[in-house]
Length: 192
Image 1: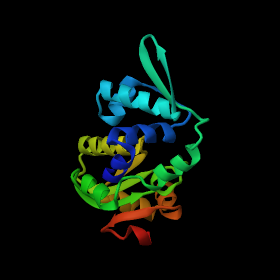
Image 2: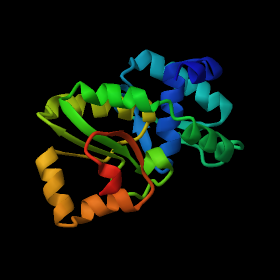
Image 3: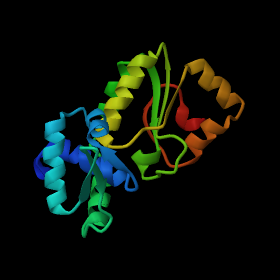
Image 4: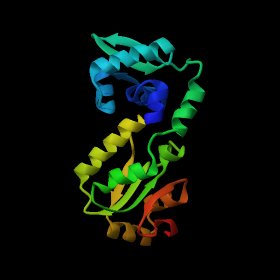
């Protein structure tokens, strides 16, 4: 995200642009943006004012609370959307390193928004043992903050994964039969 931060002025600006572009039909209050970006209210209001001047967003106030939404009439919306989708800042090693902190990770597969398939059932699939759910939740929240979109994910233990493969489970089939990228594979997930 460093390069994009330099190009676009700040990491927060990139996070906010992604939040609005990946959620075009939603309006967000400042409190929600604070939670999603991990930033302060004053910084958010400053960036919202800048993005409003560029024409990317619209703002309004509801009971003195700033509400921000994407302006679908923004002249460069399509190319900017394409650019932000194609340059998502999560490098494969970065995602794996983050997730490995949650437990003994055996496999990490990304699909959905990571592969340009927003209607996919899952965006992130993790197989591991002794995976701490609180750690995993925190890690996913960090990824969501960087991506500007909620992540649909599933975590299975290695034995549960093996059982589901043997049963030809629909979740497993949805992952391996549709566009996906394997970031880590210690269990032969590609050949499942």
